[in-house]
Image (cartoon, rainbow, N blue to C red; front, side, top):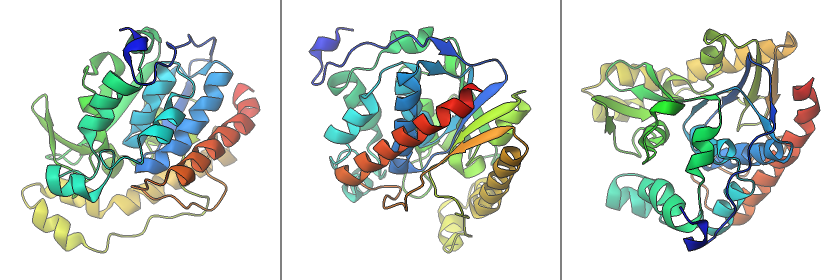
Length: 298
């Protein structure tokens, strides 16, 4: 596709020159618009040409990884500058009008097809294993989609980003799917199960954060009364999150992982549209990514 036809005709993807060794996994947490911290981290990786042989992602972690795998520096930052502040990106208007807080048609359709060029060819040609996780509403377990299985309309990432209560269930390949961050909020166990020996974990919360139990579980039980396994997964998510976080920190102590996370107190929530705050978070991610590169290359 001719990138000059786009509102912002950024360059095509740059091939990654420095592939890390097999057995090295990149593990990505979600977090809605907090995920632009991760996009900043990827910016630093792209500046050094660094690519991981294995990336496992859920929710916003998957969405922001597309620009990284396609090798397009500054694409994520440009989206923050020009489009995240738009009500079509995230707003209660979307929730009332389309039953989804985030405007997935705008995010995954309009932006990459009309406004900010995404290099699908370079994405497809990047020889890595890239997984996106979504929760199967009927089983309460994570379904993993491989890079070669991904659809042209990003539906697997839409499913992975679809937060319960503020997004519709996504029906795809005979499955009913929602946010992968429910069942695998920090998918470190998947990275281990797939044989990786060293893990770079990108989190979108400050050190010391622990997930608390959901206060309004009654609403979840009512809305998803036909999906008891989904209800159990949502209600117990805090336990899974804290367990996976503890595992990541244990691996760091053992020298088998690095955690990259925001260091400044967060001023951004899951659905923040404040461009200035989001750009600051993006730039912090870039700085933290650069600091981590020497340790990663070791």
